[in-house]
Image (cartoon, rainbow, N blue to C red; front, side, top):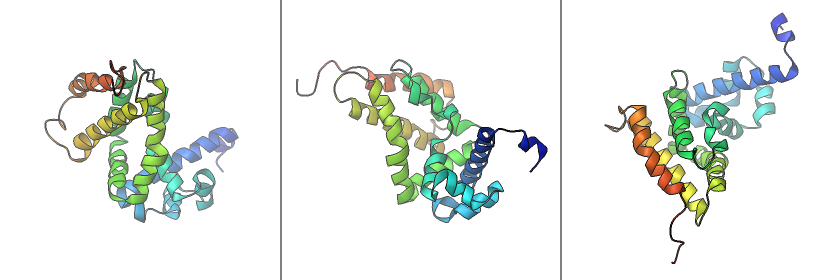
Length: 199
């Protein structure tokens, strides 16, 4: 082991290993898809033993879930207040899909969710549910969970249309224009409705 690595604490080495695994996983999910990506392949790409991948993530499904969650820099929405939810959701979307180093893998992860049932289940039950719960917990008024789900659906829809389907003029619109026009749409979903259901 290099001397520089020996000077790292156990926690720092663990973080480095996790980062290497996730970087390799995102690259392989992007290149070969969910079905053909293997634990051994990820380990080889990361330059580590396959047992370490299993130790950190347990299975390919767990690894995909971690890769889809991305990093804390792309998950502002998990700690956003109700006032900042629209801007946080859009900032997460832009940062994840427009980063020079992350865009290809981010698009591939989203594409995997649309084409492979296991990837779709993981995204729905292990990734998006955390985001929906975070949004719902900040909302007041009736139907918070449904409004949070619609909030997520709008954000995902923009991602699919802009980055996968590349629908114009959305695909080439500036971040500023998308943000300016989408924030009121998202804010309408999180503001407390005037009337409760059935009134």
